Amino acid sequence: MATATATTARWPCTFSIVPALKKIAVVACATALLSAPAVTPALASGDPDWSNAKPPASMSTIGGARLGQQGTQVELGSGAPVLPKDVTARSWIVSDAESGEVLAAHNAHWKLPPASTLKMLFADTLLPKFPKTEEHKVALSDLAGMGEGSSLVGVKENETYKVSDLWLGVFLRSGNDAVHVLAAMNGGVPKTVQDMQKHADELQADDTTVVSPDGYDEPHQVSSAYDLTLFARSGLQKKDFRDYCSTVRAQFPGETKKGKHGKKTRGSFEIQNTNRLLTGDAGLSPYEGIAGVKNGNTTNAGATYTGVAERDGHVLLVTVMHPSAGGILPVYQEAARLLDWGFKATGKVTPVGALVPPKSVASASGGKAGKHASSDGKGSDKKGAATDTAQASDDGSSGVGIALAIVGGVLVLLAIGAFVVHKRWPLPELVRRLPRR
Image (cartoon, rainbow, N blue to C red; front, side, top):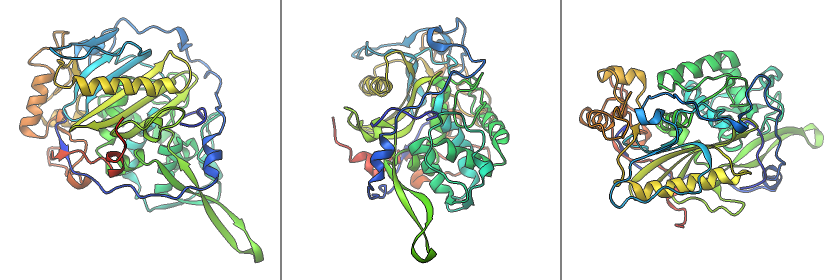
């Protein structure tokens, strides 16, 4: 997260299972890490006060006309359950990760501060740039520019870290120090922000303005529930992204110390994922089938969360932004309620929109696939979302046609710029072992 949290807690496709996550031993300092007090930064200068903000009358219609409307958008069919009544989030969206169909949404395109869920875009942008085994010695300048109260994983100057260590710090502890080191490796924060904005534009995430790579509150930095879902869906195509965001615990390199006779030693300490639907905590149980993705919390954004889960062959994405209910837990509780609803409602609702493809893929498949998925405003335009999805299924390469992953986690890029589509969702075996609720 961009700030420390309170104490612990279709692109049509089917996929193959990746190996189980390695078990990592627990060390004593985990308790200290997980019980760190919350730190809340002051409101970023020049930013509006979001506490009493209202959704704009006119919002983007990317993905469908209904997604640009205020309030809740859902089209219940026969036997469909009603939406949960106790969802207080300013904005949320539930979608099918494979078909790209939006099952229901509430102010989906409202531009709001994203907090550390923006790190999904950071990861999706930078992950391909550095081999996970590459090592980097941290300079003091790498750690410059972090916002006051930033969440940290514990990166130290003059210590050497593998790229994989830094990514674990980003995903598990939302470490802004790890983000800034990776940004330094990428040529610096300004270049990284530029790269992220370019990638957001390519993903048709037009609600997003990137100002900082870590999601820390900055004037004019905004995203939307719709865009954050696009970032998650794109990132989940990458095996490393899936592995990092679903890791519960990991060992992080400590500080080098001099022992007896001047011998240098370097230990490690445990870090645990702050995604409480993944780890459970503070009265929450791990959510059945959960596999990530990212949580966040700042003064302006409140709590934000994007999650992905699989049950009975269905894979759903949910994004929840800024519940009005107080504290950290509501964002997870509301996400879980919406996921529960989504799994029960699958096949019983008419989609109210669709997750659009990247521009390059839409262009390769003939233009605007998925751009305006529901032109009649009722989610029933046969030439809208349903048509786009059907076209994607036919040629396996259109915008709605980038699979979240490929069998064995390998993505095969075709000459036209799209991916070969396979079937089976590659969630870690750990997720499949989570107890049923």
